[in-house]
Length: 75
Length: 150
Image (cartoon, rainbow over all chains, first blue to last red; front, side, top):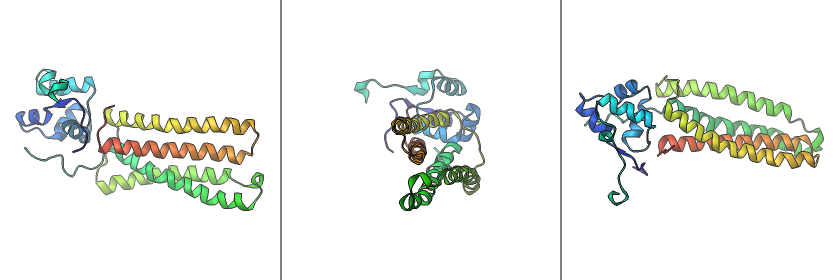
């Protein structure tokens, strides 16, 4: 994979711990395309703040359980 | 974990960008293929350029619509809306295109002041706007297929 965004996420992990939710199901619940869900999971797109909250709400967890912004020394 | 992100077709936004990236340069080259030979063999003020330009624009619009329909059939994805990421990428491409359109206006102004033939003014605006739209489509494709940070 090429360059990724600085924001990391565990969307894929959460999908599988939530009844193996498919990308298509998550996309439908968020009102976005499946391509956008894929881009988020692969770290190729940082979602808007609103979409990030929507994703966390779908999984019923706090925002920073799904999205992380590592410190410089963590990279 | 399943690999359910494999074999996903391009989104509507990406398909549109691909269509523009092909149709607009073809239309522009078609225009140039018609008017450049005329410009080389006739006095510039007698070159009929407005008709070919309008035809190029019209055919590009029709080809974009047909191309979008054919593309959707080929990839078997009839989704026809832009989501938030598509919209952000589209705006990013539009910003890139605007640079070229602005450059066209900046070039056209002195051409007008110098009272050069309308052929040069019209063609400059047309070619630079088309170049911008093509480049805008290319950067959109790169954003769709690579990393886009907004």
